[in-house]
Image 1 (tube, rainbow, N blue to C red):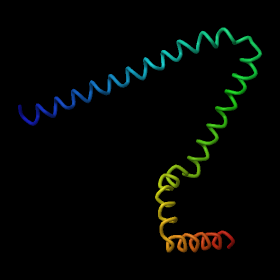
Image 2: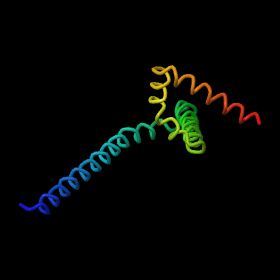
Image 3: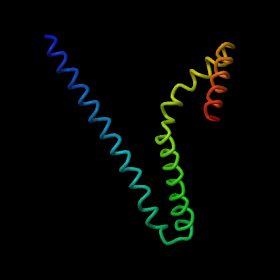
Image 4: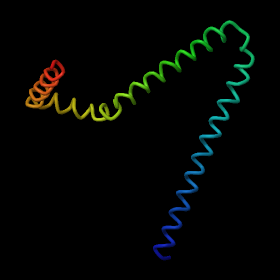
Length: 113
């Protein structure tokens, strides 16, 4: 077998793996819907569904959407991505603690101006 044959064989395995994964995800989603939809349909006229599920679910969606909005608007994902490395440096190196304190002091002074 040549290198090209191995490359095409590898891409075939990758394709089969991706299709299998996606089909598994879709089947899982259909299984959840198959369980939830009849339950929601049966409870749709009850007080529990209208007050707790409908209003509570809507409130949960609003909260999650608000968190995502703030993360994206202020680019918090990228800033918080390396927070564990920052904490490790700060708590293991006293010079880093002094530098971080000086840096935050400079930033606070800039904000005051």
